[in-house]
Amino acid sequence: MASPSFDNPSLTLGLSLVAGILAQLVARHLSVPGIVVLLSSGVLLGPEALGWVRPASLGPALQTVVGFSVSVILFEGAMSLDVRKLRREARSIQRLVTLGAGVTAVGGTLAARALMGWDWKVSALFGTLVMVTGPTVITPLLRRVRVTHRVSTVLEAEGIFVDAVGAIIAVVALDMALHAEEGPWLLVSALGSRWGVGLAVGGVTGLLITVGLRKSSWVPEDMTNVFALALVLGAFQVSNALAPESGVLAAIAAGLVVGNGKVPARREVLAFKEQLTLMLLGMLFILLAADMRLSQVTALGWRGLVTVLVLMLVVRPVAVAISTTGSGLSRNEKAFIAWLGPRGIVAAAVASLFATRLGAQGVEEGQALRALVFLVIGVTVVVQGLSGGVVAGLLGVRRVVPKGYVLLGANALARQVAHALQAREEPVLLVDSSDATLKRAQQEGFRVLFGNGLDERTLLRAEPEGRQGFVGLTHNEGVNLLFAERIRALLRTARSYTALHRGHVGVSTDTVSSTGGHILFGAERDLDAWVARCEQGAVSRESWRLEAPQVAAILPSATGTLEEALVPLVLERDSGTVLFDETAIPVAGDRVDFLVAHGRKDEAHAWLSSHGWQPVTSDIPIPDTFPSPAT
Image: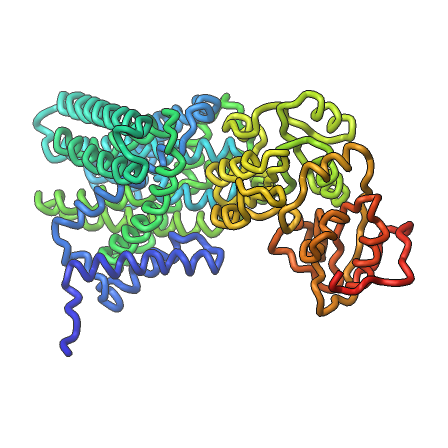
């Protein structure tokens, strides 16, 4: 059997895709920034080491692959931006993208001129290249570090918008450097045409996607994702054909329009694009890292490293300080923004373009310029990525660990669940559209939120990112399931619970499980009966500890008629408190709060005691005789 030829472009792409995903899986398990592992893997697999991934085999197609991938990444990033949040931080974002970018370009130019000894033309090109930070690096880091909403909004928006500004300015600067005889008119016409074309193509594309997704008769539901993807990729290339490098702006403009256009399928499209972005991001970093020659980076010597440090420790803080003056951001928030400024894919891609075009014009510094940009990317990603969490903690800008629950429904049964959670210092927020039930909840000391719990605006007011779980506990199990689905669409990492009616055929346990949700109380219950008992005060909340579990069933849901006697609410063990659901399997030492019906209290106590449970509440009598475990 012949050995494979690693100069095969198809093999290079295939290995890059596989390596990109595996590297991110390894990073996830090691709890380190994915970009760090991706860069290391790219170098290891590239011609400098194993030689399995050879980007040179792609030839001119490498730039095409990078372009298509960048368009999807920027579209997804822009889609996730909420214009309402952007308006609140508009001053900081606008000044970082304009004034801050200008300061960075000037600082990078001066650093390259003073330390690298390049002429002003090449130094200025380096300055424009390092203007960008980039969502390809910022967004994954922020998802891992989880800083406050203000800081996250500013950094994400800066990364996306400055990519468009920086990429276009950098390419225009290159054109001016190579065609200096055309004078300043080239700057005005080139910038104007690129911005005009990018905004126009992107805006029209965004409108077409929005209208298409709003009308299911035009675009069937099963084609929404591929419809949006095809138009974004086409818009990127059309815009670039009309005005070079304007495709970046077109992708961003389209993403903003679709993301804020009240598209019914927005969540599905965004979820698809996020998965695609994860795959393409891994492939790009593998390819570009493999395409870099370590010998060119090490040839920069100490001057290259000092240049990077000047950018990180002097230029970035000065740019942020000037841009955020009078913004309302705290000193610690400004300090964190100043620290986190890693460069990403767009800088690497444009640097590769510069090296090619400068080399064709006989400019010797072209490869060194590219190597220095890659050094900036490597150092900023590794240092700031690994230290981001620590710095955020020291500055006090980390978002609080998700804690507490949001309950849809403030009825009497929901309030009993809320009392059980609150007794264990779990914050609870009750959401309902009934003034009467909310008033009762307020009188019992709960935080409440009036509104339709299925409306996205109401859900956002509940601050879902700070919550541990979400519970649908109304009389209508269909509404409970829909609430869980809305939450999962809004925050895919959320843990949702759905209360189901026993014997109803509307929503099954399999339906809940298939949506990634969990069944409250561990099984279907007669919700109406339990709500009525709670309203009448015919129940008590009792705590029992499992001392010696029997071989027979230890879950009340497994005992048939006993479901009418008691319901498990929460389970507490050393690792914390969770709501009781179908996955809860009590072990010795666990403590569970049960809701016990007064009319069948003796029966409930007898069953619990016969199955290894001991009361924690002192006034619970222990029966002298126990029914058979089969009862």
